[in-house]
Image 1: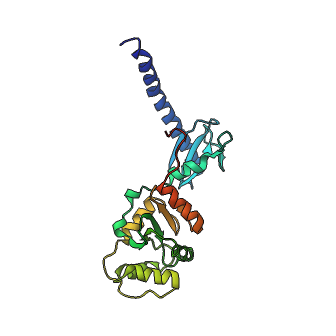
Image 2: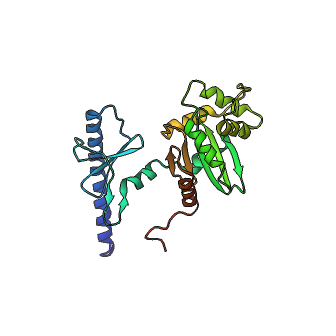
Image 3: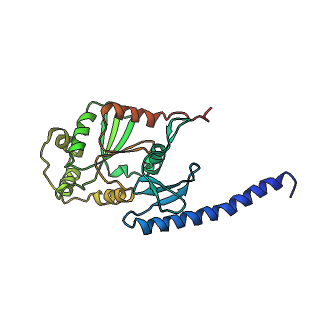
Length: 246
């Protein structure tokens, strides 16, 4: 070992020794939280580089705790120097759904204009917010919308979703119902991908409709304004440059 490589090797050894210590501490905190708040299943715990805090992810939400797991901080952390909402940025990462993981072949595909901008939406046919959002989408051009049928709201949501999927023109039946309140009827006996979509939604903790997923993986729970939707579409196509970008 040369004199130049010795410091590098020492740093690598220190990192290797520190990792198990961090992991053990995080496991202890997870156990303490499970004891103190058994009704809140903890997905992950990790040390964060500020305030001696540990980040706790529970069902897509972020909280903070101390090294004992006996205290919980509820709220957002903001870097006062950069004005960045650290919690909000982490939530985007924690809740992101990779575009490549979406079963778009099992979606109802609706194209307007050149269809260059893409979005996927988990929707229930009985969802009032979904209907309002679909009406707003009628005015958005150059977009491809992938509707993932996610019947979770009412007893007949599943039957309606099946009828839409079995229709000769799925997109038309869906839009007629969502934007004009037309009744859904027809065959419900064809093979559908709905159970697969429901399984994916449970895996990704999709808890409500609409849930919007953009090409860059950003997930938005609930309907948003057309203005905000256009901004998110632009961000997904042209992500902002980071401070280190050249």
